[in-house]
Image 1 (cartoon, rainbow, N blue to C red):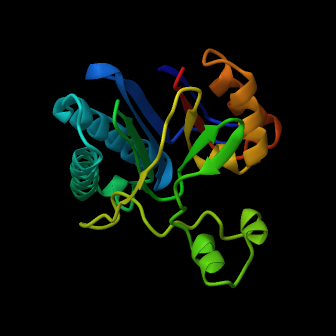
Image 2: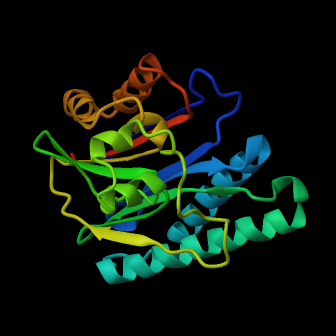
Image 3: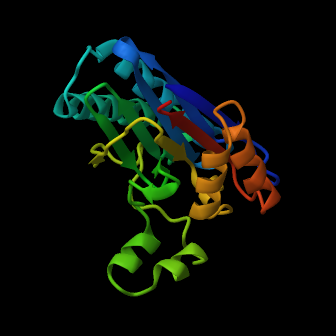
Length: 243
């Protein structure tokens, strides 16, 4: 498998509160984690980097060859819970960091399973035969409004309150995580990203770039297009190719 990863501050922000880590595991398995911090200049940076590093460290420490989907989910859950604890404890020690939090989207791909987990509105997509499908579901106010039939999915894309998320790491002692199993066959690609990308590049635009470009240039091209289309937020894209 090959990786393509890029993060960028965007065109208007003064600091980049996104964090990501991606790497290889035994038996040719792969993991990736993307986080989008919130809570002011310092708080967002600390929350996202703390979460990304703790989740990645726990996955690397606890992964074993040929883990089943159930075992991978348990491993991810433990990692996210510990990351949540790290953030809340850090905020309690430092009043300047009070209220900080972060989204998290995680993927672990093994020879027998592909497991995705998310908290917040950072997303994971699968691109198969040129077709893109969003695997995760946003934990956001506008998504709840869509689910309740109050607004359409099209309305949600430009809703003034679309930045309000309903789940995050660091905001409560308990954290609820959603898990998704998916196929990941040869030729497929998996994209993990923050809303700085999806706010400015359509799903079809994302699919076209990922399908046409190789791993060396794909993530950079996605970030460049998001900046060209507005770049109002930090932008992060991690693409995993099953080549």
